[in-house]
Image (tube, rainbow, N blue to C red; front, side, top):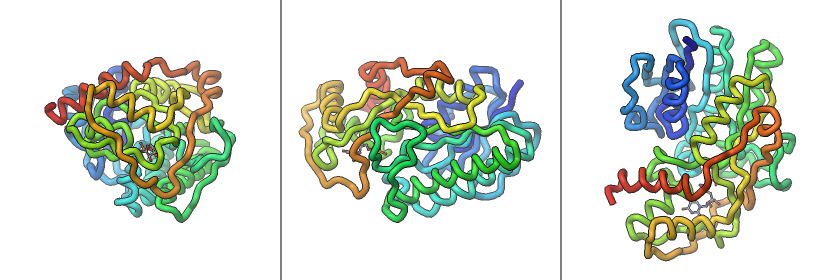
Length: 311
Ligand code: UDP
């Protein structure tokens, strides 16, 4: 039975990964310091093949026994989190990734790094292919996340080239689904919470900036395929169906039957104007493309939010 460590395993994506890998017959170790993750996300897991360890992976990682795979997902991931936790965000991208790679080396495990579309910054190439180097402001408020992940990619490739570690890098584009926190601060959770509680929908700027939203189950499938592939270079995983943020706000008003109004507030600094993954590589090398339609994905996310907010 393969044994897999999920760092950030009590977070939104991490908890879905823990469940998915248990279903695939893996023994799963979930490691999280719970600064943005929550035990609630993993409380339904009853398997005796599952273990939770509370630990900050920016500190040396000690783990007994053999290990086959490391899914390195620990990091604050919402702009409001990395604005509030800038140093932790930098440390987990840099020191946390170094520790995870050291563990991969010691255990001869395959390591998959959760990277991000943020490595492309405010992109000047659209849609974004993996060979685009990006347009990042290193000293802006988002720089702590973007540069941490860029460093994480660099050290991952260095361990691959220098130590021959079998590493994978996924660049994750905007993803949504159940277990995003009600107070997560990202667009879909904010809009759902606001629509369900009769508050104004806070569209930043004019809402003309675009994003492309992928449902969590599609993302998890892409991660699994990448992990088992022979690909060591970064691969974008995301849904190429692009929309403006204003369109997303309207969609959520419609899906929730809400009478909330849209209010326009100033655009945060360095907010990318456009974002859409070029998924040619994922299609070609992983035979992967997203399947879940936005309406369908929003429906199950809405259900989760209704339960959380008891509306
Ligand atoms: N956004 C918004 N209202 C919100 C939260 C976010 O208009 O309440 C915008 C944000 O400015 C960005 C887009 O929605 O242009 C997506 O933001 P999110 O925080 O979800 O993730 P990002 O893609 O910026 O990392």
